[in-house]
Image (cartoon, rainbow, N blue to C red):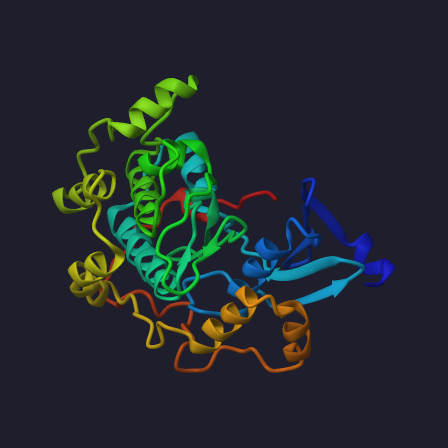
Length: 326
């Protein structure tokens, strides 16, 4: 990297293991690679570099030097769903129901692709959902994600953001893909109410609330019963899996113009995961493949206006025309 490029960067996050910088219209994430972090970092890179779905954040390129992994990702000026919700609170606005449905249906597609490729996101929340334009979203931040090995459907590491943890995680039990369904329910609830479904300053009280699935009723009047019902169904102990959700919302996806992915299971990605768990140096393999063209094929590419049916009326209000500062 040149000195000029470094001078053009703005640090927007600095942690012990990773730092994130803004450079023009790109996000640069730099992570230290060591024995403790290598597997997690490689898993994140595999997901980002494999471009599994247009509903998932992907990287433009990556570089490895001096035990530092540098990942370059697109910067979206609309930023995250969390910031949109905070703007709604400040301006006393609400996200229109048809826009919530669009976000919800796209997130279903993204989670479905993750689960088909044996990936549990483990930290689904509004701040990890990127708004690429007014009506399109992508799931991002795979730093906490876990790629399960073959014939293994459960894991037990306690990870994620406490107020968005599912009952099984917060109680230290083994868990599987359904913790992402809980995260989806938390996102949907916050889009509707502008509040988090579970909150307490006291750790013990938070555990009790989540364990009992004790959420406050949705009091917003201009929301359909169907959308409220989905929210309640996702935030309970016995949640539907992503395939069931996908089947029950398939007709709605068609109505809203949300495309389903043609390629769900990515065999190339699966082979790389096998190498990862066979202790091969996947970073070296990825570096050798780096010269290939990773552009998404025309069949899988989604244009900026492809999500929305021409007859769908999206309410334009001062909130969505508001320019947000970095």
